[in-house]
Amino acid sequence: MFKMRDANTVYVGNKPPMAYVMALITAFNRSGADNVVLKARGRAISLAVDVAEITRNRYMNDLSVEKIDIGTEQLPTEGGGTRGVSSISITLRRGGEAPERVVEPPEPEAEPLPEVEVQPEAETQPEAEPEVKPTSEKKAPPKAKAPTKKDASLSDLKGVGKKTEERLREAGYKSPRSIARAKASTLSGKTGLSEKVASRLIEASKELLK
Image (cartoon, rainbow, N blue to C red; front, side, top):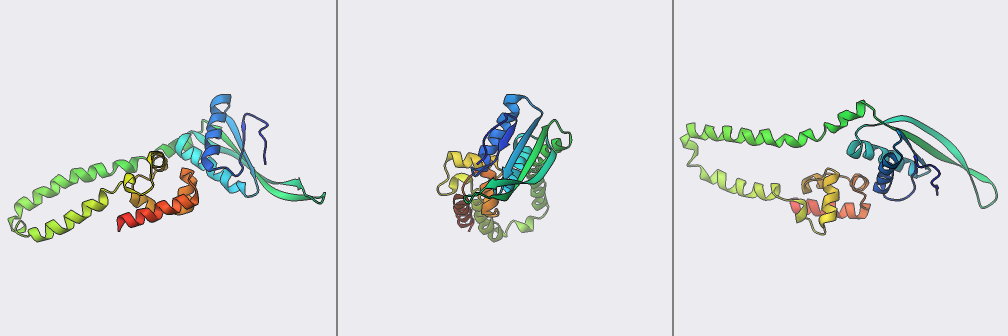
């Protein structure tokens, strides 16, 4: 297990991703440094990469990857010998220009607004077609069922409390439909929840949307 040696270095182990994301943000804020290094070895290498991406995309949009070093460390074995273990060092720099564009993804969330504006325009069309009014049989059944699925929210899911709901929303999962389409590993990595809990949430979302 790694030990902290430098305030500007974060060592990644086997804790949840969000623990290292918070440690990375703290390292930048407390030290005031422009560079912080993420280090990991063995199975924790992929987790270190995820931590860097989550921090850049969701919390510190001005971060950029300055350098990535991949190597091998020799660790002692019980027999007195040594064995090679893969290692990685990711140097993150604050103040890059290109990552600022990452702030743009939230814009798609505003797309539903123009769709609402188009609806009143569509309502003017039936005025010119009085013959469509008698066909009330087509309007009643489908429109009564559709809103029930669209109105489903995170609070409707079984076992989801306020803290879990906040984690899901921060990770970009704002509806049961978005959770139902996700993979357990991806949901776990973005929210810090275990894969078992993530799998249960996905199954509950699918049942709610049936």
